[in-house]
Structure formats: structure tokens, C-alpha cells
Amino acid sequence: MKTSVLFLFTIVTSVILSSCSTEEKTSFSFMAIGDVPYHLPEDFERFDRMITQINEAKPAFTIHVGDIKSGSVPCSDEYYGKIKEYFDTFDEALIYTPGDNEWTDCDRESCGSYDPEERLDKLRQLFFSNNFSQGHQPIELSRQNKVEGFEKFPENSTLQKSGVTFGTLHVIGSNNNFQSGEDALNDEFYERELANNFWLESLFKTAKKNKSIGLVLVLHAGLNYNNKDEKNGHASFVSLLREQVQDFDQPVLLLYGDHHHFMMTKPLMDKTGKTITNFTAVQVFGNHDIHSVKIEVAPENPNLF
Image 1 (tube, one colour):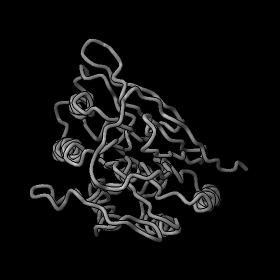
Image 2 (image 1 turned 120 degrees about the horizontal axis):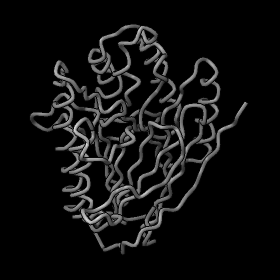
Image 3 (image 1 turned 60 degrees about the horizontal axis):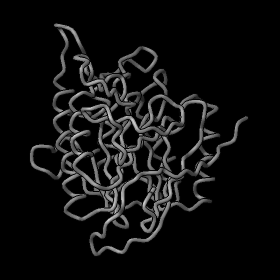
Image 4 (image 1 turned 135 degrees about the vertical axis):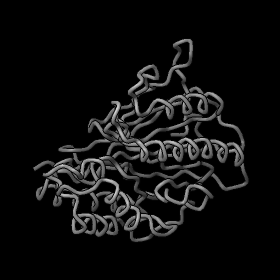
């Protein structure tokens, strides 16, 4: 049986850090995981072992980028409750943003033939009912549902640590639940798209206001960066992301899952086709590869992450 492994990496950027807010900027590390557990029941033992290793490493917190099951595991209240119990075995805080498998796929017969939006409501009630993260020592988060007009979106959150702004966004695989075709019903998509775009812009505004030395964005989707594709459910988000990153002179780290292979890229291009160097995307492990990625934040280092 495979064992889990902690991976440490450095992201190189050409950005020079500037002085920022009065908050003390000290080095710290955090973990990123996603698309786990996937296969039942064997993954529960491996997931438990990974949590033990993470607790031994003593990160400031752990981030789960979404997909707490595969697309064929039943979307039952019992299963969601079991995952919440696992999340609370993390010694420190566990910050979670939903993936597609825990709600958009739930109408499949193998998943229990649930209504996807009803399952999304259940996730919000179970994991995002207050201002605190999951984990044995939860931390307080600022949630989007406190903003007038966006009361439905507690899963989008933000926190500040050591001069770095963190933000979760509910952008998912399965084309972000965007359905193409004349008879497609996309009310849920358009409402969440508006919320995500508002929250993305707010995160950059907050980072600038606080003179953050970096920004970490957390979402589930392996983004489709092809804005010319009319069927692309990520198009408007990617366009806004490109604009905001170019207007922000500090490192931006995007953590995501979806495709289950550890990968570090610089996928954002400007209008001339040049790489936008202060943006780095890191896809975490997942599926059969139950590993975590350890990210160290070093404010005194120009590379930051």
C-alpha cells in the first residue's frame, strides 16, 4: 500500500517584495491537499495516515482545494458527516473549498440521484455555517455571505497571515457547472459566477489596501485559459484574473486540484502572448496519489513562496 509523502517546493518569480502593512511578517508553512479521499473504503486508511503525517509536520494550517470523494461515491449526509469528522482530526485549521464531485455529480445514479443544488445547500450548512474553518483548532475567516447581495456564498472566504492575503473561490471542474445548448439552465452558474468574480476582485483590492506581499488563491478547477471558447465556464473568471494579476506587483499563487497530478506552471499570458511572471499555478495531488504539498512562505525572500 502506498504511503503519503510531503512535498516541499520553491516558486521562483522575478517580483521584488515591497514593504507593506504593520502586521509582523514571519516565515510559516502550510499544506495543500485535494481530491482526497477518493476510493472507498481503502482510501480512508491512507487519508488518516496522511493527516497523521501533516499533524507531525505542524503546519500553520492545511488547505483542501475540493473533491472530498470521487464522482461515483454516494453524496449522502452520512458521508459528508464522516468527512467533517476527518477534517476535525487535523490538529490545526483545515480550510476547505468545494469541488464538483460533492455536488454537481450527485444526480448520477451511482451517487444516489440527488438534486445537485440541494447537495450544495447541505455542504454550505455543514461546512460553512459559521465564521470558522474546520480543524481541531479552527481559525476565523471573513466570508462572502457577510457582504450584502452575496448571502448565499459562505464558502468564499479570506484571511490574512504574515502579510499574505489568502482567499477561497468556488470555481469548480465539470466546466464550472456551465451547461451549453439551447435548453440549458444556468441560473446557478451565473449567480455563482457573479459572486466569484466579485470576490476575486475584492481579494485583490484587499491585498492592495493591506499592502500584502503576496496573494494565495484557492479553488478546485483546473482552469480553461482559452477565453475564446464560448462554451468555457471559466472564461469570465480567467479574464478578470488576468487583469487583476497584471495590476498587482506581488507574487500570486493559485492552488487547485481537479486533474490529480502534481504540476507547477505559469499558464497566464498577456495579450501579446508573453508569460505573466508573477502568477504561478500549482495543482495538488489527488485520486490514487494521496500526498500533500508543503508550501513555505518566507517574507524575507524575494521569491516569497
